[in-house]
Amino acid sequence: MKAEVFLPDDYQPAEDEPFMNDRQTEYFRRKLLDWKASILEETAQTLVGMKDGTRNIPDIADRASEETDRALELRTRDRERKLISKIDAALRRIDEGEYGYCDETGEPISLKRLDARPIATLSLEAQERHERREKVHRDD
Image (cartoon, rainbow, N blue to C red; front, top):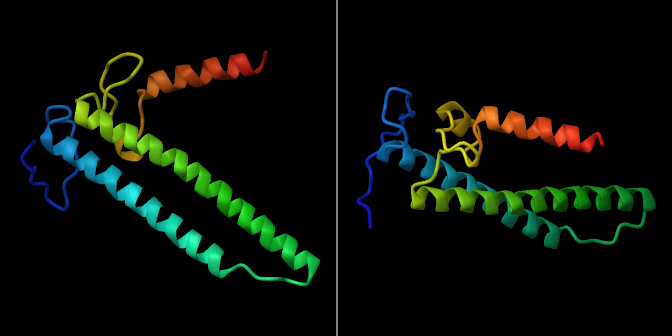
């Protein structure tokens, strides 16, 4: 088991450091864990709200509006459930020493991209190629 890495509260990964050193790895691990905790907290609040919010609304328009809001909330939570699996996959990549490297090219993913999207598995260039191929195949 690794020793805990000291990470100042104001730490930001920098390009002049060795890529995915212990501090950068710990920074992204904490970022991913915080993001996951936030999603799980929102999910718990949604469940409580849905249990407490169940009521019989006599006006059909009001009931339809509430059901639409509830469906939207459930779709959002479903997207977040999928996001949690991506966060867990990123945490596994950290543990395996593969985090931060493009799945397609093996090159490092930029720190700016990882900071903006910590679950990224492709470099910006590889992601753009992927999206162009997707667009071409979608137009067929």
